[in-house]
Length: 119
Image 1 (cartoon, rainbow, N blue to C red):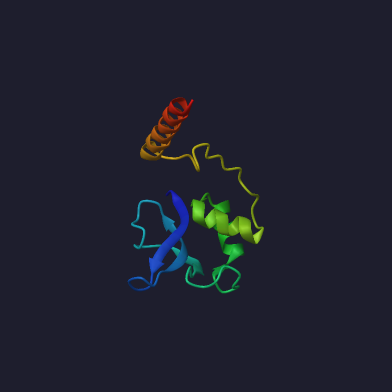
Image 2 (tube, rainbow, N blue to C red):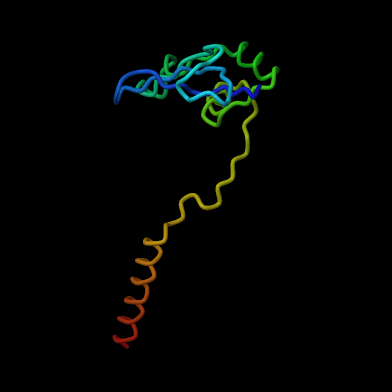
């Protein structure tokens, strides 16, 4: 059975609250899970101790049984210092999209034309 340690959404509309759960990867996000391992409340301030609560011993137990952490849960574990930080490389982060590149090119062409006309 392929196991994941992931977030399961709880809470009402526009009031998110997540449970950190160990679940079969084939189950729906908010569906059946095997064990609740912690909670995450994104509405609390980032420096609050209540924002992320994780039972680290149980997470490590499930990781020992072959469970994979999702990206968000692995970031929580990294922030708590329980697992080593992964090197993430997104070479396209911060690059403008197609429309923005076109507008910048048009502005550069207009500036070049205005400069050539002024001389």
